[in-house]
Image (cartoon, rainbow, N blue to C red; front, side, top):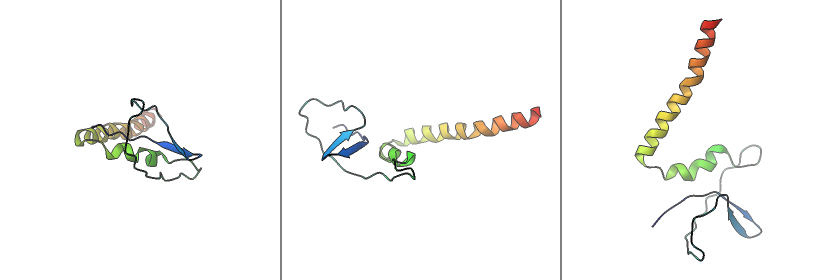
Length: 87
């Protein structure tokens, strides 16, 4: 059995997924509802919309993501150090 997490919008009594679901017509599914936190501007927050996706990652995927984030965090520091040297 496959489990996926998608964001959906509730409008006029219906849930509309934000992405296309790869399901056969008439497929029966189980739905769990988690309301996303709202950002100051009124839309879903960036991290709130990722919550369901992140909850289903494997340990290896989490480790890969942490490594990628460490590299991304270092890039602005490297850039500012190069700019300081060039001044």
